[in-house]
Length: 264
Ligand SMILES: NC(=O)C1=CN([C@@H]2O[C@H](COP(=O)(O)OP(=O)(O)OC[C@H]3O[C@@H](n4cnc5c(N)ncnc54)[C@H](O)[C@@H]3O)[C@@H](O)[C@H]2O)C=CC1
Ligand SMILES: CCCCCC(=O)/C=C/[C@H]1[C@H](O)CC(=O)[C@@H]1CCCCCCC(=O)O
Image 1 (cartoon, rainbow, N blue to C red):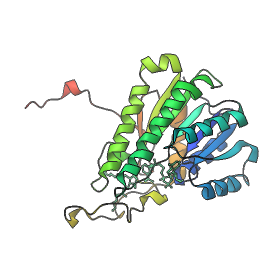
Image 2 (cartoon, protein in one colour):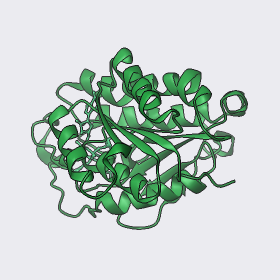
Image 3 (cartoon, rainbow, N blue to C red):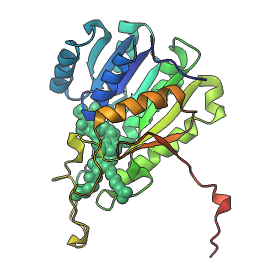
Image 4 (tube, rainbow, N blue to C red):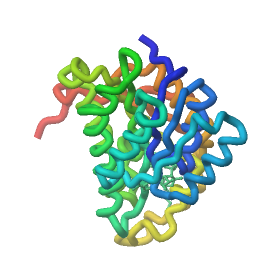
């Protein structure tokens, strides 16, 4: 069954940043009724609303200053969505940072922020306040969740955890009562401010891991967001989608552990 974006309401965490902003724009292009940009950066959030208001109906776009690590702040964003647009149907748990020097902060934003969103959505807001038969949660993971990148171990761990959370909440135990489809996207390196890792990685044991972005295939956040719309509409619950190198989204398949050939 295909999910219809047209006429629905979405909340996008980190919606003022590179990927989040493009998701907001793609939603508007696909007929969303209303979208809440839930981002900690007020200056950027206000700017994005004003820029998008040149192209779309301003009444469809709301900025709500939100810190996803603080549950009350995150809940206020859901309340703002209901107050302004009457229902809430899609959550993009998208806010994320890379910071291996302040690794606790990386865990707070990338993991605790997503857990806050999952609990608020599955126990209350998307469960009870959706318009149609089904709601959707899209968690932004990363290719680093399945291919660990050397210099960002904490980031890799948070993204692997997001895949686990996605697969758990997709189980019929949850779905039967929530009717929320839960999927994850794993972008490859995408042209946003997050790819500038200067000052946010720790010195390694030697300099053999020193790298630059040279050689990494960069894709645009606009291309990524257009693929994400297809995932929202068509992907089955519990699936994980890699979107890299400006290629169509493809599903990442986890191995069945019982098929493992190796024994100690
Ligand atoms: N750009 C890339 O190469 C890739 C990015 N990703 C993921 O995509 C997501 C979006 O990242 P980008 O757009 O690239 O980065 P970005 O830095 O351009 O945007 C991130 C946004 O999140 C917001 N944010 C940060 N902390 C927050 C908090 N506590 N509460 C609410 N909002 C907060 C920021 O203000 C910013 O607007 C992240 O989860 C990131 O890990 C995944 C794979 C690759
Ligand atoms: C010091 C430069 C290291 C270059 C790696 C890089 O740019 C990492 C980018 C991450 C970005 O900040 C947010 C992400 O999700 C990116 C993860 C990239 C993982 C790359 C794994 C690639 C591979 O080994 O196949």
